[in-house]
Length: 204
Image: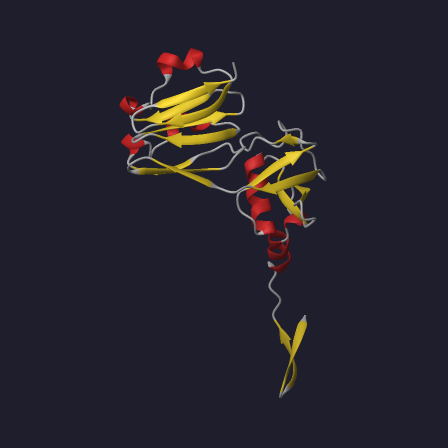
């Protein structure tokens, strides 16, 4: 038993039987099922990050952002951009792998009563405001992969993806529904917007 000094001498101190378990829970390296990754920034700063082996790339991204104190990170492995929604296993990541992290500058687009925050190469757009003018993007979130550009009309948003496709949401009368021309929206290189409509510049 531990003892503490007092005027009366050394008195026994009670030992918490749960202390070893508490230490184990606090140290991610001791948690069964965790895997470790070495995440580094271009500056050379590097941190060891632990996540559950059953987790996703998004879990790894969140842990890396907390460890590095840097938000809006994009992760790559062997030069390939990692999809945050894939499991670690599906992404081919294993215990001890080295991950490169790049801090992205968030960008903002706005309709008349809604906002959208996004990063180039990101897999998500954060929206809020009036749902009827683009403030609710839940219906298209799973389609937003490797975003390159987001622009807005008065009441709708359009996102151009790395594969040259376009995803829209918001008021259809302001361009929020591109289904009538979806077949033509291929190899898009740039988007432009007026108050009422979108225009796409194609590679050809």
